[in-house]
Amino acid sequence: MGIGPLHGVSLGAEIGATGQDNLAPMQQLVAAVRALNRGELEARGRVWKLRRGPSGKAVTVELVEEESGDVIDLLPPEEVLRMAAELEKDR
Image (cartoon, rainbow, N blue to C red):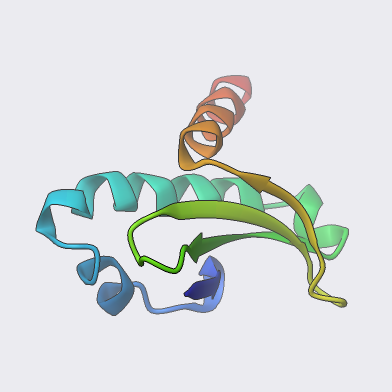
């Protein structure tokens, strides 16, 4: 299930669907995706989106060309968290 761009989505229902045990890690991932979406990528018409797999449990993060909807890159959540941490260190 696609969650869509995070800057325009109410997150409460989607995060709650993962169960209370996964709430904190999902909040960290949402914050990381938001941080990565700020600035340069949006200016180029690209955005990171969370995507759930068919089972509803596996989560990946996609880099999507907004105009066409084409997926440019696909990353595991751990990589997105690492990238956001690197970005935060550089600020």
